[in-house]
Each structure stands twice: as structure tokens, then as C-alpha cells.
Length: 341
Ligand SMILES: *[C@@H]1O[C@H](CO)[C@@H](O)[C@H](O)[C@H]1NC(C)=O
Ligand SMILES: *[C@@H]1O[C@H](CO)[C@@H](O)[C@H](O)[C@H]1NC(C)=O
Ligand SMILES: *[C@@H]1O[C@H](CO)[C@@H](O)[C@H](O)[C@H]1NC(C)=O
Ligand SMILES: *[C@@H]1O[C@H](CO)[C@@H](O)[C@H](O)[C@H]1NC(C)=O
Image 1 (spheres, rainbow, N blue to C red):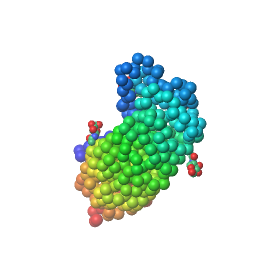
Image 2: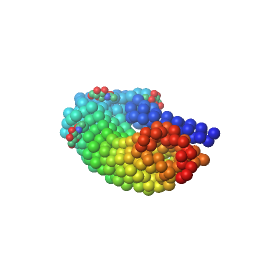
Image 3: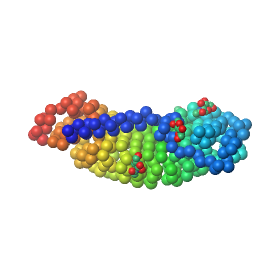
């Protein structure tokens, strides 16, 4: 009975993560459709007047959405940093926008300090460009408004991590698929609104620990250069944490006390270099109702993993695809081989 419940939990956790993965940031996705620009009643009678004159901001385009009463700015066609700067010197009758967008643009390499010249945005989508540098205070007009910052698929080598704690409402931060060489985990401390963090695919050293993130649900760190996971690595204090993605690093060891202990927390260790699953490290997470994915690790499968085959059947919370170095599935091992351990 218990193992059924556990397997079910595991499936549920997997589904949640799959959904999150499918929910890859997309502007139409519901989870991002939370906050609206609230316009004073007086400003509403001529909505189109909330946008600057089209010719003043070309080739950016401003659109007003009457349903959500919000204005968005799309600067995907911008030709240079200098042009972007000039555009924000235009007369903006309304300074609080919902969304800023630059997509599939090869012209902007640097996002310069104070580039928005006081205009604020809730959602910043600068995806699939060749951006390399985000200068200090580039997004300073959005400290109190930004709920989403997505810089996915650029070529960012320099990001102002020290400034992150200023973004008091930041709930989604995506810096995946960039070229950061070092990511200081301590820079995320105290982002109390943060729910989704994705810094995967940078091949970066991740230094420090993830702490004091009370609303975190999802943290994706896959395809980076982690080799050891220290104690307190993820001590977010969030009871909503459901996923920690560490796949595709080069992790050889995980110290006890590395992760939050949360029911339903799915830890993905696929494609790493673990040769064992130490009881002191993993038992607390599995006992609390968490799950572990370990396929594609060179597990030796000696007496060191006998604890998974005990009466509490914790193996049920390890993924079905986990194998030993000889290719044998953990789930197919005969428990009696551990009798003499
Ligand atoms: C966003 O929210 C508004 C109102 O809550 C709703 O009418 C609209 O359909 C939503 N848009 C999307 C893309 O879900
Ligand atoms: C933004 O503008 C670019 C070209 O300037 C266009 O191709 C793209 O579809 C626009 N995106 C949205 C979401 O309006
Ligand atoms: C990213 O930057 C590096 C060096 O700065 C360069 O070699 C590489 O071609 C760039 N990649 C893209 C996709 O622009
Ligand atoms: C956790 O999630 C629930 C439900 O989505 C939400 O109400 C709550 O504020 C979140 N945060 C914490 C710390 O529980």
C-alpha cells in the first residue's frame, strides 16, 4: 500500500515537472498571466494614447491590450544599442508597461545601464538574441515591477548578480542557455517572491548555496559544471519546492544535508558521475516523500545501496531507469543479494 502511494507521488511529481517543462516561458501561458498594469480611471478614456507616437519609437512597436488594460513594447527589430537608447528618450505618456520584448535580434550585444530611462516593465523577455553583457543597473527602472525576467538563449557572459536582491517581485528568472562561467548562488538569497529559477545550460561553476527563497517551487541547474554538492546547497526554506534539476553536471558526490527536506521534492540527478547513493545523503529526502532520478550514473550497486532494499522500500522512490554500471536496472535487482550486507 505504502509503496503504491509512493509510486503515485512520484508520478505526480514527474507530471508536475513535465508540465513545468512544457510551460517553458511563453507569453500565452497562463502562469505568466498574473499581473496587470493598473491604470488610473482618468487615463482610460483614450487607451491608444497610452502608447508613445509610433514614429518616435520605431522600429519598436507599442500595443495596447484593452482586455487587460496593459501596454507592451516590442523592440525585436531594433538596430543598435544607440537606437534603443534614443527610443527611450521619446515622450512616453504612460510609464508603466506590462511587457518588454526583444527576440531573434543579432544587433544588441550590450544592455546598457538605465537603458529604459525610467520606463518600468513587469515582464522582460529578451530571448534568442546575441546579448553578451547586461550592465549594472540596466534594468533599474524595473526593481519594483519585474515579475518575469527571461534572458533565455543569448550569449550572456556578464550579468549583474549583485543587483538581483533589488527585484522585490521577481517570480520567474530564466537565464538558461547562456555563456556564464560562474554563477554565485548567494546572489539569489532573499528573493522572497522567486518561484521559478532556471540557470541551466551555462556550463558554469555554481558557487555558494541557495538559501532563504521561501516561495521557490522549481530550480533548474542542469548542464552546468557542478562536481560536488555541499551541505546546505539548497536550503531554501520553501515548503513548495517540488523540483531541483541537476542533470548533466559532473557530480561525483553529494554531502548529507545538501537539500531541503520536503514531501514531493523530485531531485533529478540524471547524467552525472555518482558511483553510489549514500544513505546519509539520500534517506532523509526519500523518507520525507521525495523522489530521486539517477539514471545514467555509474552506480556500483554494492552493499552501499542495500539500504534502498530495506523494509521501508525506499527504492520505490528511485526512478525505474536507474541502472548499475553493468546496465542492470536497480529495480530488477534481487533484494536477497543484499542479505549479507
Ligand atoms: C489573461 O487574463 C485575462 C483576465 O484575467 C483573461 O481574460 C485572458 O484570457 C488571459 N490571457 C491568457 C493568454 O491566458
Ligand atoms: C515583435 O516584433 C517582431 C518584428 O519586429 C515580430 O516578428 C514579432 O512577431 C513581434 N512579437 C510579438 C509577440 O508581437
Ligand atoms: C558567443 O560568444 C563567443 C565569444 O564571445 C563566440 O565565440 C560565439 O560565437 C558566440 N555565440 C553566439 C551564438 O553568438
Ligand atoms: C505555496 O503555494 C501555495 C499554493 O500555491 C501558496 O498559497 C503559498 O503562498 C506558497 N508559499 C508558501 C511559502 O507556502
